[in-house]
Each structure stands twice: as C-alpha cells, then as structure tokens.
Length: 142
Image (cartoon, rainbow, N blue to C red; front, side, top):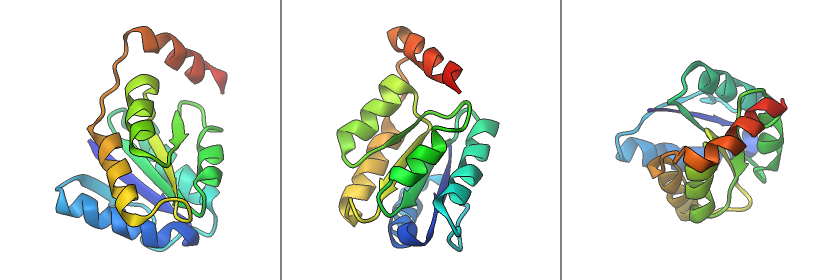
C-alpha cells in the first residue's frame, strides 16, 4: 500500500510529524508537498489523482482545520474521504466507508494524536459486505 501526503502551508509542520512516523514504521509513501501547496485545493487534487490511479493507495491531507481538504476531496468523483480528529473515526471510516483519504487539521489535533490517527487509518481494512451498498451509493453521487 502506497500512502500519499499533501498539505498547504498551514499543515506543513503536522505533515512532517506524520512523515517521520511513516519513515520510522517503514511505510511506503510519497510526499507530494515537499514544499507546501499554495492552497489546500491544489494539494488535495494532487493526492486524489494518485488515489484514483491505485485502488490500494491511501491519502493523508493536512491543512489548518482539515475541513478545506475534506470539502475539496469529496468533490472529486471516485473519492471517499473523511475529516477525522480521533483514532476510532479514522479506523471506522476505513472499515465501513472504504475511505481512501483522511484529512487532518493542524490546529485541531496535536502531534501524538495525529500519529495515532494515521496508525488507526492505515491498520484498518475495508469490511465490504453490507457496507458495499452505501459505498456504491457514495461513488455514484459525483
């Protein structure tokens, strides 16, 4: 599983914290925002394009509150994303909604919580089954 990271200026510090966590835990990732995007829409589109090319990939987006990246991501056909600020939501959105992207707000979550959220998101697998009906509905919306 490849993980793609994207951020604007406001999420840069938190992205670097998560990046160090990914390195320490030997995750395969690509930082698409070595320098921050001008706007969260730009970083979101970069990550979403990669996710759409690889069904097994995951994305993590950062901005000030997580909301802007989330709003941008869900406008893109084929993307299911979740704005999360706790570990359980990160895990469950992957397990039940087949979310491929999470968004984190640098002004909302601290460093340790962010790495815990990322760990929960990346450790979860999509359950399918009864959840597939809703996932199909979500995918048909855009």
